[in-house]
Image (tube, rainbow, N blue to C red):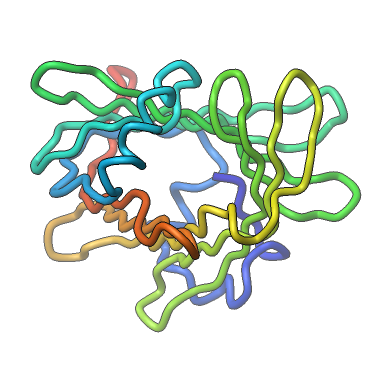
Length: 201
């Protein structure tokens, strides 16, 4: 993730383990306790998600997953972070890839979903009383064939994400809820993960 004090309200209150994890390469393995959400028509629509390595129709409990973060710089000199998420369902391996970039002009964090990129969303960061990172999506644009268009609010997938750290278990935690004004809950997952150390470490 691309997280700096200027992008996060009350950054100083952020949990030390979360400060340590952001803005560097990071690989982790964990378990999604539950992946759910979406009516039958929505899940049918999500069947096209795997073509873009983003949304997918499968749901389940206690699904193993891997998270890989890789920092990069854009051609404009903007800081960015690749997000590669792999979910190991019993019969399928699914992916949810995204790129987070700090826009050079506005200093906003922009989240680009999919490969090739399908959707762009502004992200807004705050810190909870427990020192966890709370992420709320904002304005969104569709991206097709190099073209961008602003999505009306009724088409937004409104994301609310909380990333935390459990002192008792030594695990990072993640809680994601994506909703839509017309269709209700589109997608949700909740899980835990630990950093996977390399041989050098």
